[in-house]
Length: 210
Image 1 (tube, one colour):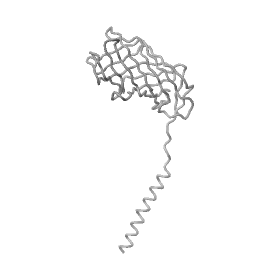
Image 2 (tube, one colour):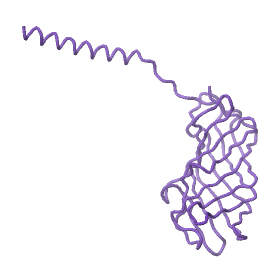
Image 3 (tube, rainbow, N blue to C red):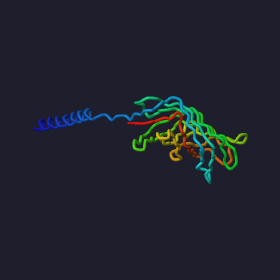
């Protein structure tokens, strides 16, 4: 009797395992999100007033720039992955001042643009720009390196893309940018910073997802 029960138990276990495997095999694979970019190619994103803020300083230090410009390229076509859907090569901030002091802020690195989530109702997309590195300086006085969570890693900012206006708006929330090697008297190494601006792209571009 024990031998019969033992064999029956094994059969039940094997049967359950087989059913589980069959169930997994029959489960549909999740489709990866794909994107369409038109027209793609070289792009320039120009913003008006752009602010760079040291949120750690007390009170927070805000640098106001009269304009800023993203330059780079976007992939073109459909069926594109959201990661590195484009790459910026430079981000220049123009005529920047803080408390009547003129500063220079420049980001020059390979900065991927990543599409995260599409809102088909609003025709907008959640985006990130990663790999940001650069410098903040007061000519002849002081300087600081801009990077991510360490002095050698690129930082990330969050943004929203609007197809109606072909505009990438960088948000103040979600930034991982920090200052390093800082020799300026009113900021310090490790300070968290962010920037915000609305960059209108030329040529007019649409970025969508099914």
